[in-house]
Image 1 (cartoon, rainbow, N blue to C red):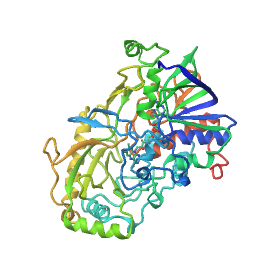
Image 2: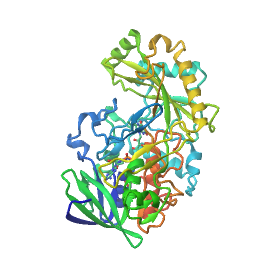
Image 3: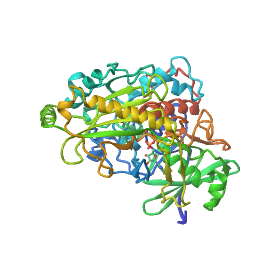
Image 4: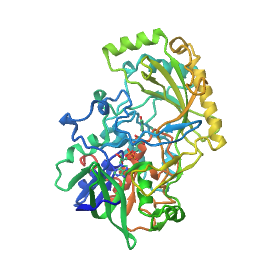
Length: 495
Ligand SMILES: Cc1cc2nc3c(=O)[nH]c(=O)nc-3n(C[C@H](O)[C@H](O)[C@H](O)COP(=O)(O)OP(=O)(O)OC[C@H]3O[C@@H](n4cnc5c(N)ncnc54)[C@H](O)[C@@H]3O)c2cc1C
């Protein structure tokens, strides 16, 4: 960072990144310690929900906005893909699909965290409540989403309605959605709105952290730069990185914490040789078939939308490919899309227990240069086999009596001409994994006072959409940070 430091701030705890995890951590620190907390976020802060100052697209839960995107791009399967990440207070919870699924208990038990009896279920229930997530009622399902449940039943995928149950099995149902009255209820509304005037909280928004300053095995400061190039040095006793699966490893690497040879090649002084930083990048890979909806579906959707909300996604099926772990390793998550100006019905299948691995690598010490992202999509043949099975399930569902009259012809992929397209489920993970980079409390190996708490901690991404799992980890690890055991006696009144 070449610009001169223009000011110095100090806090007891510095939290970096205000996405799914950061606000949970901040809230816990304010509620259960006397610490001064400073939250740094690269993107804008639009304030409390009730100020009415939020951009409409970030509030509208029925579409996926890209107005606040970081601009990550990289190799996908058969071309360059965009990897959406929101740069705003709220992070990706301010632009995501609002599906709340918990995944499989075994995925959390495999983390090596010592969960108390009942702890996982209690934390999932609390997060759903605090996030205002509710399962859509039958009469709230759009014609397409309702028909999808019938189609799944025809293909043998039973209705289980257990997407938020850690002991859920293969089956389908509406997913709980954190979208009360159609508003995407992001993590800032859930965890920051009530404490924005707290005397021990400061939010430094529009400030991108370049790097941490390491001295004698501890971090003493974070250097952040605003859009005009002015640098703030934020000094603190403890630093918690919640900048996400791309942002957290980028910050560590620029700070000299990572694979020594790679860092030296970029001219970065090595503070801690930690080869796991940026390694193990992986994601849920998907294949989708897109259909030009028939007039019947277009008319039914318009009639439905005239009298009630018509969300673009609501139901999810969990299925077994035969090439992954029980009880399920695939998600089918149908949605509708108006990208072409006309309603299209899209049925994707995603591999939710991927074995393929890639790597995040810095290309430059310059914080303005985004890291190179190789997710390793379909590198492991088992993932390719699972995805093929997923595509068969999609085609089977599309051919059912419940769906076929609504779907019309498949829309060919614009590049390959095939009837299907590969993509991802927006769930990158694993780049600061528990074990190789941090311990089971999120503390970075080799440093006394730095923690990572976000999606990058999962050595294996959970079999779920990743907002709720990230919140769960943040809820537990911030309890560790503030020294609270489970069950916390004041859980019901703390928020
Ligand atoms: C298009 C899309 C749809 C999705 N749909 C769903 C869904 O329906 N259900 C679901 O459960 N999950 C969904 N997800 C995934 C989910 O939202 C993410 O997994 C989750 O938000 C990740 O949480 P996080 O805290 O790790 O990171 P993020 O939420 O990405 O937060 C990281 C924050 O850190 C900030 N930051 C990064 N680098 C810096 C830096 N250098 N300095 C300062 N700040 C920085 C970012 O701006 C951001 O605010 C979706 C994601 C996308 C992109």
